[in-house]
Image (cartoon, rainbow, N blue to C red; front, side):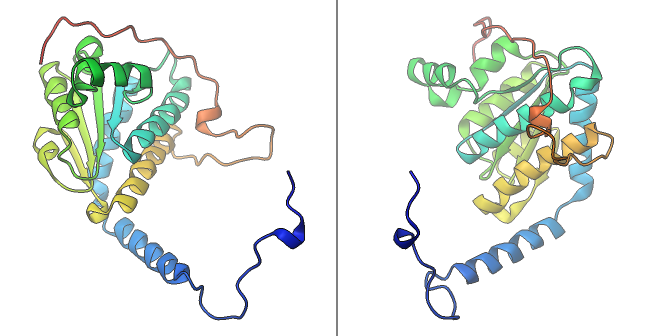
Length: 236
């Protein structure tokens, strides 16, 4: 339905500041995000990305997990990485442990929300696979359990956190950014994924070219091998 012009919300009259305070908030957020980027420990980010990209080059599997906004970032990152890694050959396996809502809710209902990631890893994880954990607090129990199981299975644990909580001591590679601000940290989670894509592309940015479709890493053709249902051979 097209709303008639005379029924649309008109802009606020006058040239003064927006009555909602949006202008001030926008400027402050841009300043905060700029500062968070300036404070980024590029050495730590490089180490984490090198580990992640080398794992994909070697054929290891990558699992990504997070809660709330970080759960959708996990899906976004996994989709982009799987597509960008396609040219490496074979069938790259990058799995967001949050993407199958039926599996996640079944584990939460039948066992515990604290086990929604660890129980999936029990059946799928293997030595030299990589587990990337996204968290603002760094204390989420389900991520701590996933890290513990991952280390037991011989996986490499990477963590991108807003606060160096309990996950920090379990991570083989660690990045702390965003000053524990949920918005800034979650923005940087996605930026981290986009940096990984650019590394996989040899440093080339992925830009829209005007052709049909998006042309982005998630729109690229990539075969994905199905990962089987998790087994119950180990208990944690």
